[in-house]
Length: 147
Image (tube, rainbow, N blue to C red; front, side, top):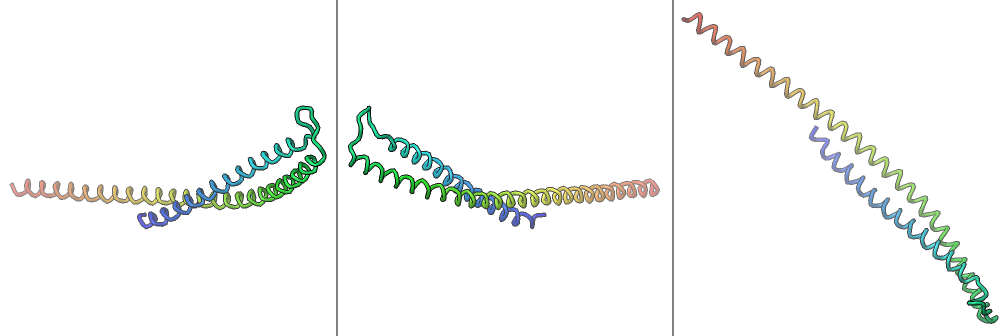
């Protein structure tokens, strides 16, 4: 029973490490999602040809067009990165769920072994008390016969 404590501690440590990795992976994915949303908004704002009804001159439009293309590339890279990071997050989540299951199984086993141990101890105590009671009865009978 108490030998399981070391295994349980190791499993708990593994589960906590995977939980931290999962949180980091989830945070990275959320960051990328927000970054992608910001890029889309920036692309949308950059695509306008006028500001307050005033047209941009051709040189400004050319610069804005190049900037828009750069934003599109960055958006594409961020979307690819998000897909890759989501796949990693799913793998880590699977490992975390497996580690959590392993720990729970070990905890159940520990609880069952602990219950068995205490039940056995209780039976031993009852047996000893029965023996002590029997000794008292025998001593009482000997005293009566001796009187």
